[in-house]
Amino acid sequence: MPTTQELKDFSTQVRRDIVRMVHAVKSGHPGGSLGCNEFLTVLYQEVMDYSTDFSMDGEGEDLFFLSNGHISPAFYSVLSRSGFFPVEELVTFRKLDTRLQGHPTTHEGLPGIRMSAGSLGQGLSVAIGAAEAKKLNGDKHLIYSLHGDGELDEGQIWEAAMYAAGKKIDRLIATVDYNKKQIDGSTDDVMPLGNLKAKFEAFGWIVLEIEKGNDIESIISGLNKAKSLTGNGKPVCILLHTEMGNGIDFMMHTHAWHGKAPNDEQLASALAQNPETLGDY
Image (cartoon, rainbow, N blue to C red):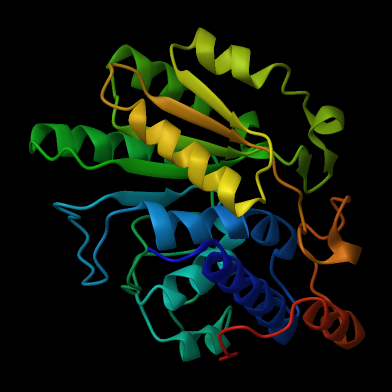
């Protein structure tokens, strides 16, 4: 297992990848990508049991489904640096006829991508289906999914949440990126979410909160606790309290960088704040 410092070095390099990818094509979503960087780092480098010999059936391994697909820069970086495809392919991000589209797609066969994620609200349903398939196959591996808090405005999420509890889908860990921001402003202004913990619990879920959602050790502890609670007849939800734009001072504490690329000067500042650790592509 990697050390905490190695995980921090990995996440620093992912941060560099994110801003360089988005800058290169002058489009993309750096804010949420940076906020979920540490979570994806820990998930793929520490917690999940998976093979980089990728197959869509996923037998005998844990599976992850990204529902908030606009944070693809973080996902692509973590996948490539975890061995799913060459790091050098990151340079093709958002370019025509390449595998690294702005939102992940399955038709190009990019290793690590198990669902096309663009229309928000669908990932929990897909994850539940995968969990049911594993149950039918006698496979006790876990299903993980990630969702934006703004995505919870979608009614399909709550239909799926009701189904998961009602059908005792208990090898599922669904994480909400709870940064309290979305493209048009704060979640409180756009569509107040109320007490999310109480809502998921009312739907029959076990709910954990990771208050320091950009802290490597807190994420490891939270995910391991979530794993220990699976198999008990209830799905598990993690409310991951993150900071959009984490690690780059001018992108933090605002929703403005949800879907905006840095210019040359801003890129230089972002990279200076995150010195190279594993080598750029």
